[in-house]
Amino acid sequence: MNIKIEIPENVKYIISRLEKAGYSAYAVGGCVRDSIMGKTPSDWDICTSALPEQTLEALQMDNIIENGMKHGTVTVRYKNENYEITTFRSDGVYDDNRHPRSVSFVTSVNEDLARRDLTINALAYNDSEGIVDLFGGVEDIKNGIIRCVGDPDERYNEDGLRIMRTLRFASALGFEIDGSTAGSVHKNAHLLTNISVERISSEFNKMLMGRNVEYVLENFYDVISVFIPEIQPLIGFDQKNPHHNYDIWMHTVKTVTFSPEERTMRLAAFFHDIGKPETFSLSNDGVGHFYGHPEMSEKMSYKILRRLKYDNQTIDTVCSLIRLHDKRPPAEPKYVRRFLNELGEQLFPKLLELKYADAMAQSEFKRQEKLEYIERLRKIFYEEIEKGSAYSLKMLNINGRDIIALGVKDGKRIGIILNKLLAMVMSDRLDNDREKLKKAAQILASGREI
Ligand code: ATP
Ligand code: MG
Image (cartoon, rainbow, N blue to C red; front, side, top):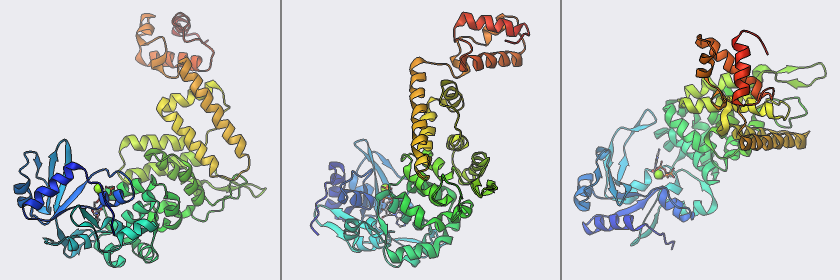
């Protein structure tokens, strides 16, 4: 195969230094895959026959980060970029479906490629030899196929995380998983129970943000339910409601697909209806309802996201979006301000995106009205931001010190008065004008109501 890859000058330099010292060296893995696909690689990994000490010796660079040396990786900083240079290795027997018991350094790139997970990742390149492709990786890239290097059952048993990587790459690259690899993914899904949740979540995030997420969720929910068993009741759950033409799971899949490729958005879409089965009721006319499902979904998502070790800010954001996803107040400024009060300016557009994705993932019944409603909320949002309308205590043209000056000493009462003023401003019963606010505050401070 005569494919020319443009290697950055820095990488060329590192490879040539190693070659001059008598070793072989290649760009390897994701960077070769991405280059062949015409994408700019995020980083360039290098592999070499040189042992770590020999790499250091050959490069003679001052800026060396030596961690990982015993696993064969030297990280050098060269012209403001970090490069990982790893000695060819072959992994020995694996313990606990994750860790090779021993790693041995080898002299041939072929053995190093053989230990890699997927054919599309088992590619090496340098200018003198061109592409080293022992497992048909280039062909698989051309055909958009994800396939294990070697026997999939063996490879997944060595390292269960590869199951998530298989799904992640299928989703991110828009590739399809080859039949025998797919069969093995289903068969070995349970191996994920041996993998740390941090690693699973990290792959799950990338999978959710991929452009082929629909295909993966639709076909591999059994894998997801190994670490999120809470999705099982959604699968095949008939909603018996004119707004829905899909079961809850497929509605969820479509909502994820219609939401922007951003982490918190995709997580919120994934979990937004997870509490539905718990809240299902059937009215006399045979129509299904899910009263209180946003709160139930929020509660369940909180537990799941904690278990999967997401950070607090992510959990907060995702839970807020889920809690509010089905609120449908009249499209009026005061209600938009309430949303803003709860979510802030950054998050409110995300809520609108979630509402949009949710509506698109439902039946066409009243869809036009739903979309127009969302657009009215959006328009009001822009107008309110433009006008600088107050929706939080900070934005009020009066503060705690002003209330103290009126003779109120008790902190709690100060808070109550300020909140009453804000509620009036937000509902257009009072202008956010300093003098008017002071007058109103005076009345409240004297114990009267307005
Ligand atoms: P990206 O960095 O764009 O997410 P990548 O292919 O570079 O994709 P990395 O996780 O950085 O992925 O891994 C670098 C290379 O190491 C991979 O291309 C693959 O060849 C190999 N690799 C990574 N993880 C595994 C694994 N669990 N089992 C086997 N090989 C792996
Ligand atoms: Mg990488």
